[in-house]
Length: 385
Image (cartoon, rainbow, N blue to C red; front, side):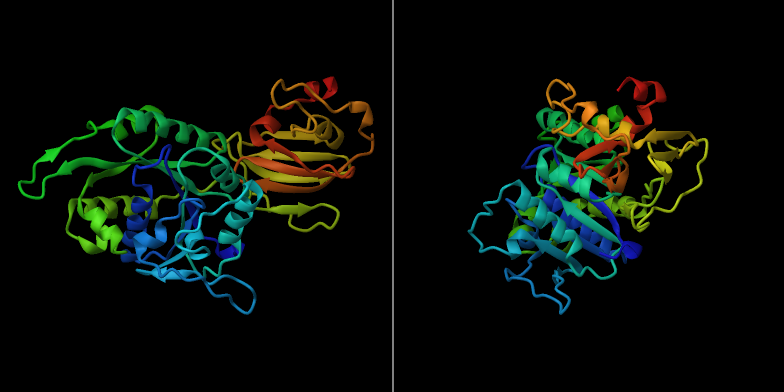
């Protein structure tokens, strides 16, 4: 995907399964298309893909461009890629973690998306490897959490929100799905799963409440027919809720106030260096405004104007990877005496919105340095290692 024309990437997540997240994703996408937004969907639920069925995408393997790019399917004006298009209808995706990562990255980077405004990522439920992979591999513009109003769903949704916060993905808001059942005969609303839970959790966590989507029996029939509810019942209360949510997400701008992401800066060749941006007093203290390298050290300027100089050898010694530090106790496994005095950084790359990866002249390249941990380093701490 061309960085210059990269769309805003929004993850649609849920703490648990069965909350209707994929239906919400598909209908939001349709509503965005109706409003003139160019939309794509990555069905990131590798093990249980459902987006093609909801949108009525034909079950056939995608073709390739002469350049080797995957041509996505298209339905209702939405471009779609899914594991369901690469396997038979009843064939399970039996994949270990590294293969899942490979598929996810190819779904974003090796698909000929064309000009998109928004790319929605329909995540599997939970807070596991797929969510972390996407947060680390791509600079997500934000995440939306879908929940139902009952207490157990809301408690698990809270975990999903906290996970996204930890990897510095902006929370765009909470959607309460299946929010009350409207009787098709008399119009009476019955709150099967309580009332107002989604709004309460959004208020508690200080994020936006995007709206309530009422439970509608037509969702099942529409989904089975491959026609999203917003198309099958455009005048329904649920369709109106989807349009309201889509409008809020289409207009939201949660751009970072730091250097452009993603980037991969090869210091030995002076390629890929991120362009600096002006720092300002109200800038984020965990967002980089500029990154410079001098022989044996890095100079970091943060968005709030603070500056740091960190030695390459010091950074190598405090590497947080599992080879250098015990993951359970935090005890250092690396002997500082084995680190050369003249070691230097050879490459730096962004990890999602929240960290830097670094390669060193001794060949080590598995450490992920969060912005928070880098900002916390001081010259005194460096002298102690």
